Amino acid sequence: MDGLKQRIIGALVLVSLAVIFVPMLFDEPHPERSSTTIKIPEEPPFPEVEAPETEVPPAPSYELREKAPDVPESGAGEGEDSPAYRILEQGSDAAPAEPETAEYERSLEGAWVVQLGSFGNEDNARRLRDKVREKGYGSHLQAVVRGDTTLTRVFSGPFATRSEAEAAKRAVDEAFGVNSLVTSGGK
Image (cartoon, rainbow, N blue to C red; front, top):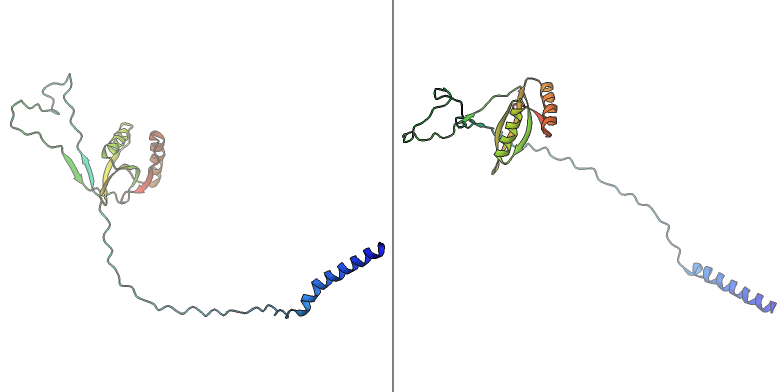
């Protein structure tokens, strides 16, 4: 049996070697990989074109509008001769006056202001302005038209230097829980 085993193993080894090496003999030789260089042409020079100067439209102007505070009803303890109030008799032909509005533009060139917020609802802006004034800080409103929307900005200031405005910003942020920003007054 030992002889038969050796012959079978030998035959398997020869068949295995034949399976590996015979295809190598009959295959055509593979061409070696060659690297080709690609030449990229230089970028052509672009002609210089002089663009016609366009006229820049002026920046939108801002308009400050403040309404005069409503006059409270006369309270107890005030006399009729008080110069601040005038009582109209019933049946008077005088029509009730429309609320006064003060429309003017201030020049804040060179000054610094603290912008507390921009509101789409003017009542919210007025409430914040009134709270700021109650705490002793000066504040004012500014109406800005952006497309179809009118925004009301609340400002505190003006301040002569940026450092004064920064100090006011920190105090206002802490007092009212807002994240305000310091801007130049001319904007």
